[in-house]
Image 1 (cartoon, rainbow, N blue to C red):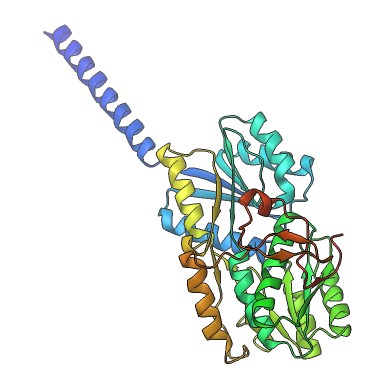
Image 2 (cartoon, rainbow, N blue to C red; image 1 turned 180 degrees about the vertical axis):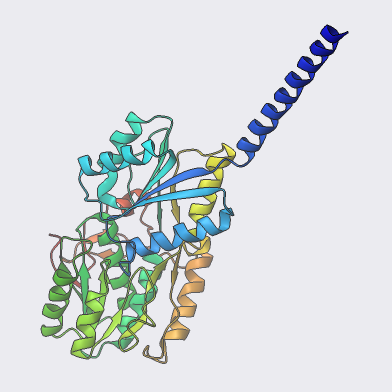
Length: 364
């Protein structure tokens, strides 16, 4: 009897342990947290590009309701070895998808994607892909064009400053879109470009803006990650178009509007696809209709006639009635680059290496 009771007790213990084990495994799977890596070229609070990504990251975390944990690396140099080293560290910490948010991270991400085939990678503004490496960007040229309308209506000297980072297609395309927006309302105005060859160096950016202002520019615009260009405008009593984030509260004396980024929706959808097991490598290029890019609300410093013209152009872009890069378009030499009625292809836009005819400045 005692032997039979002992056997029954042992069987009961095994059943309890088995059930507990299954329950523990099920709960663990249900409550599993996905680790997500973000690599920034500048500080997360730079007031520009990196902060726009970090805002998107934070909103994604909020949207995911505790299902994710993020690991952020700031101020990572655009050097292959630095990028690969950063990624290795993130993988060691358990990241299953990693976002590299600067163009210069491309070579490092390509190498890391080969080294870690089971990890998903997404590179912002790049063009190289693999089975586990996708790219994402937005048609920032759409709100760039709209901001050009505001600048063109604002300038009195017909000279607009544009402080730009790197002479790559992404930046050149944005300058041209801005210049075409200017030209649509003020054919006499020019967009004067100064290269800094850095994404984030407030001292260099400010010096470039000051030099352009001294040359007679009375409105500034930028493709830079800090607010230094606007600071130069404020000190000189000029007006500004920002970039990346709204400066309505930080630069109220000069800020009229800015092309903005909202990565929150994209990051939420992308991370959710990883969790669902549906993630696939793609080349994403969304526009204003997708919500990833937009023009900030115009401030009271913008000309009174600007809002109506911006609204009209916005509707035309969203409906497809207005394609910014439709010919006839000429370059700085007067050569026709896009014939009348022809629309530039995505391939041509992504490799753009020329300025439209109302841009002053070199491509180097």
